[in-house]
Length: 190
Image 1 (cartoon, rainbow, N blue to C red):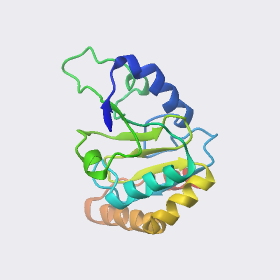
Image 2 (cartoon, rainbow, N blue to C red; image 1 turned 90 degrees about the vertical axis):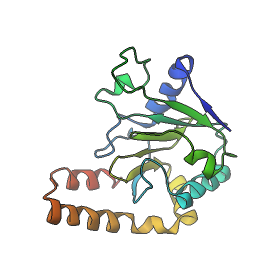
Image 3 (tube, rainbow, N blue to C red; image 1 turned 45 degrees about the vertical axis):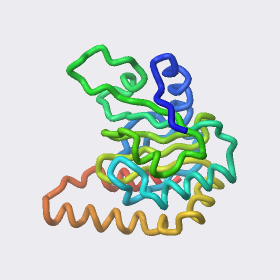
Image 4 (cartoon, one colour; image 1 turned 60 degrees about the vertical axis):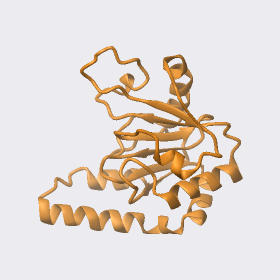
């Protein structure tokens, strides 16, 4: 079951978010040092996990954690402090937040109106994923969490190789700026 969250939930979900993440930029080290392992997940499906990734996440969570609910927050904003505030400026996009339980199907997840970079994260502050506008995600949690996820989603092991090929193509064909790339890859090696 998916539930849209209102301003009355913002303090609670912000606490969970900041137990996992330092910020909201999926192109740099955005996880707290207490998160043991951080890796790249590529490609994702726009602003959503691909079906096999979502299924692997749900199976991993059902085997490891007793998360009563999982949060999703749209997080693409200039200031991380604005993510969990009610938007009073009608000219700005209003970031949305949801919770869902582990029985939520992939089809239900795909019907969520996610329009910007977003985070999927533990209500208990144990693991998290940030999905970027460039169709990659960073995933962090315990070593056990990442190992179990990899077993459920074996394509995970090709993420860095495929991501590198994608960005080399972008550099060669679109002259994409790659100054951030090495720093980002280094941030994944914990």
